Amino acid sequence: MDMQEIFENGCFSPAWLEVEEKEIYVPQKKDLTVLLAELEEIKNSIDDIKAKQWHLAKLMQFHQKGLANE
Image 1 (cartoon, rainbow, N blue to C red):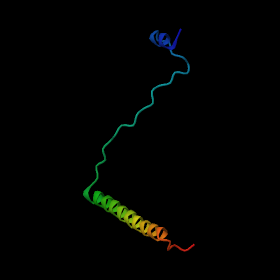
Image 2 (image 1 turned 30 degrees about the vertical axis):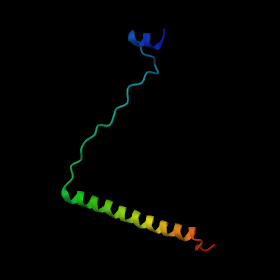
Image 3 (image 1 turned 45 degrees about the horizontal axis):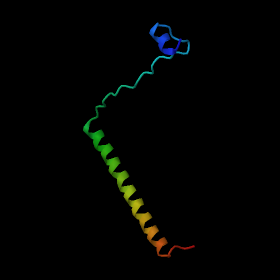
Image 4 (image 1 turned 180 degrees about the horizontal axis):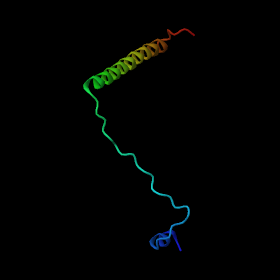
């Protein structure tokens, strides 16, 4: 018997596993102050990333022009 026949006959092997439970999405309800604080955090992260990007771009310019100390 193959696994399909065993399944159709209602016989399950000892290794048969139940289907894992899936996480159900539960929407979070946040008040306006929490959302504004999270938005401010995101803005600060973006500003930090932009500053790092600018700094790296300047370092690359120095490197490409041969102005970097070796």
